[in-house]
Image 1 (cartoon, rainbow, N blue to C red):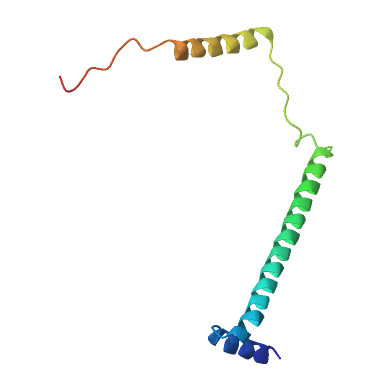
Image 2 (cartoon, rainbow, N blue to C red):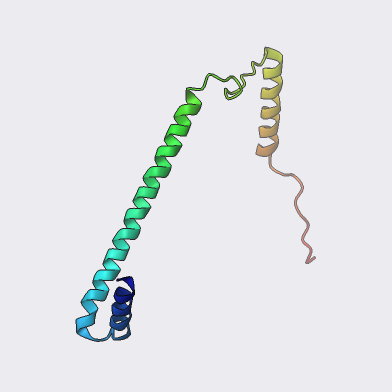
Length: 105
């Protein structure tokens, strides 16, 4: 059965310039595109569903190793971090005073 279908398709494709062979070739091409699209949609749905349930399982997990670690900063640590960030921003905002020398002179 498949050999005869393949032989018929091969014969139509070899004579694809004939008008009577264009419709079956176009129909086979269209059906192949539809099947590829359908497989892609099903694959995306399966992948999305598995990712969704994976995230839901992680959210409902009672295991503390999966929970993010919460580190509380005390006031001196927070102040040192903020001052370091402020100093870094000030260094970034100040223009560079040294101008590059012109190598052509």
